Image (cartoon, rainbow, N blue to C red; front, side, top):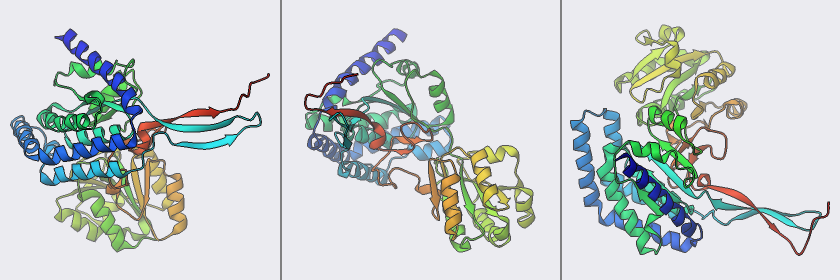
Length: 421
């Protein structure tokens, strides 16, 4: 069985490499035709997708999967509509492939520039959310890449139903069906084999829990685009509009818990903590959020639990929130850079200089001013969709959309010039 899995994965890699050469050369019109056909297929077969999803949901509940994962697994009509909207947004984006920039003449007479090109073959390993299947497929197609997708076993039926729609759409547009391949097995050994497929796969994108990403980071021989944690902060500055601050802090946490851009630590300047925290704590309490505060926070809101050092590092992904009172911007920035995960952090302030310092000195992939951390998402950033979020600093950072799935190569134009040393 192990040999069969290995051969299956190698066959997928071989087919993906071959397909990548075809789709890399495909016109924008052909790729658009594929995306539009996929959108129609998803819409036409939404009943089949929902039926497959119901099968996954029933199995998840029977197997006692945690509620946050079950929430991510659900795919109703609204979720399908969002998938279709995401496909259409990706289709409407400017095709980055083939763009030549920075052309300049050198003293020798040659002209040097850079051309944006696909990465080649992308492998994505993800958990729970079946909508990721169509997001990853759409972005890969538009950016001229072939992709291999390995969704979680808990969403197997949903992913297969969506994958069928993708395959049909590719065929309608005249592109190889192997431009997008889904694993047809839930055997975990397949992941290990995929991580060693550096002959055929150019980049791995893991999307899921910390354990999954740590394993891939440890075992992969292929470059990775990833983030480990989403320890996101809201800092309420002494110059903040407190009504705005309360709204942003509440939304950043409560709009959705089980997402990597949810607020996990609230920092409040000591000058405004007494005015802000009592009312905001009541809002959180009414929403069922447990607060874990520093000593200064608990003096203002005695009902808070006591925060430990571990709470400043915690990604709760649920109705818990760490709260700390700080003495000014310097302490807030120092806290975020020490305890944060370099994902998303926001400042609420009316002071331009403080806002400027915050976005300059906070070392995170997304740094915000006067808005909710929940906006840190490719869809909301106008990317159409995303394959994930990167907190690394090489190649791609923040939500990874079309441009993050391409790179640049140098192109040189000449007119007979030769080099003399």
